[in-house]
Image (cartoon, rainbow, N blue to C red):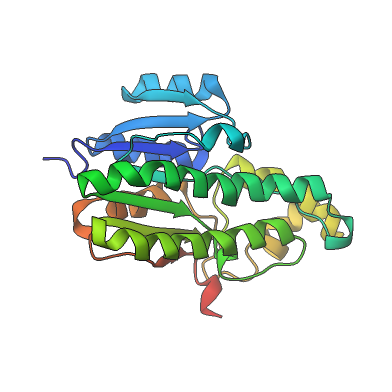
Length: 248
């Protein structure tokens, strides 16, 4: 029997990148996957490929999430955006948008999913954090603060969910080979005053011992294990996948 057979998994930002890799891995292990994404076409295409369900949703519309009842055995809070800029130049509107999407929306989705998980006596909440949930980098004030907040939310969820068979953990990769990372290169080059061709070597990989980007499928492999039956005693933790960055 596949390890996730009979489980319903909701994956935010599931239409591409890390989310899509997790959805494919979960589906291969027998899960019914719900691809939640702002891009409805991407969600529909992947859901059709995997025999799952598409959910077109704007997670920054938090008012719509406050009354949501979410049917999920597994919830993956993965959706995210990035903005690279010094604090004194950071747009307040973008700061708030990042926190809404990457901290408030996960809280509301967890809130919506927990009653059903408690009733069934099983739940897996996976929060896609980052090495920036544990370490800081200049010019990423909103992202770093949101990820640090997500770490705290995940731990509280773990404590409250434990008596009900619900676990909550963070996955903390370094830079992953996704469109989100590629889109940062121009901003990083401008902010650091270097050519775009030097961003990987001089910014993104400078702290890592293993000098390459993380593959989405590597993140998905860890997520699949954490979602499965062998991780029932793993909760309130942060699983770092950063090529040795945080070992320094």
